[in-house]
Image 1 (cartoon, rainbow, N blue to C red):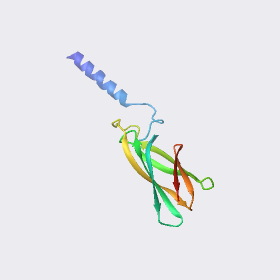
Image 2: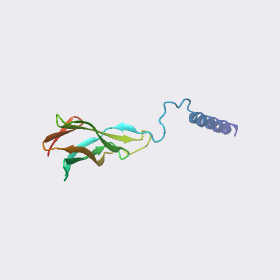
Image 3: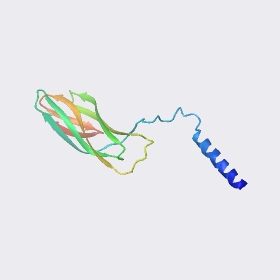
Length: 132
């Protein structure tokens, strides 16, 4: 009986020590999001009836898991070169347990307002031309 008590006491001490993790200064706070990849399969353009023409791009693709959320942001517009660059990535909680399967997404981003001409949307160095 004494051996069982010692084992139980040792197990309880080990569990208590495991819960006392030292310095957590570098640990992620609950809810912190880590950047991950997003993979483009298709880009569709929407042209609004306005002057100048407002353009939106619907990006269809996949993210690594159902826990990832796709984010698209216009990061650079070079009117002289006729290019618009979009930063596409995913966000997820790195501590969340999630099934490792590709998850489809669809996100729409405001590309901008444009005069008549030829333009190029750049996402992850891939070019998607459009004409107004």
